[in-house]
Length: 229
Image (cartoon, rainbow, N blue to C red; front, side, top):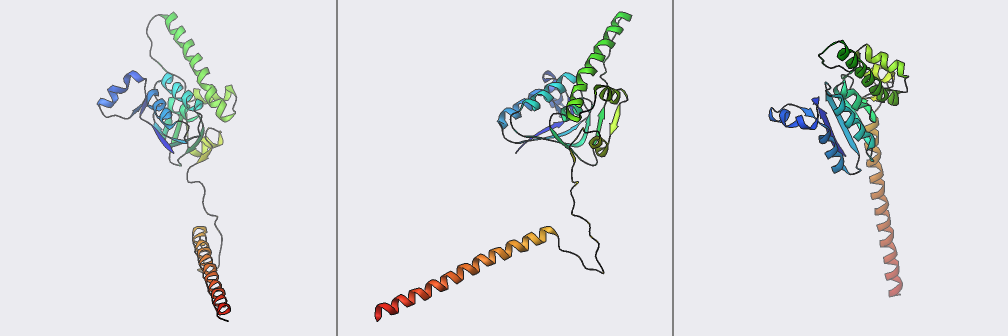
């Protein structure tokens, strides 16, 4: 099992050296593609704890994960915000019960006259429309639902993300069933029962081997007696 960490801001490849120089967490597409190439079809776990970043870089990472021929399991362990939430849509995804996901519209900075501003707004709407496809493909929600969620800058707990179909499971969710008992009586755990069962089976094998050896010894004695007579 290979592990890929998507930690810190999501950045283009050319910016990676800068964040590495200051020893700051960051993830660029090359980080992920190199790890996937090394994995070469092996099962991969992707751990996400990122506030987001550049959408083009997030889209490239998302696409690389979707194209990977092996099994992908994604785990959101801290936060998956903005571009990082897009990456989380790339495969089977679990989320820590203490983690957060945030979905919002694309943003940028612009300058110029009214035509420039109108053009920028058009580009942003187009970008929102493109990114909404990741949420739609994962959850089955409509484009209108996805765009409304982005427009509201929606913050989601693990439970809310699961309800919307944006994740598949909540980490540590499976627990042993709770049973009511009288007094201080307590049923043995499943783990304890399995351990005892293994010990019994092992002892049974040893007993069978002992019985076989005893029987073999008896046969050997009979053969010796027959030879003497």
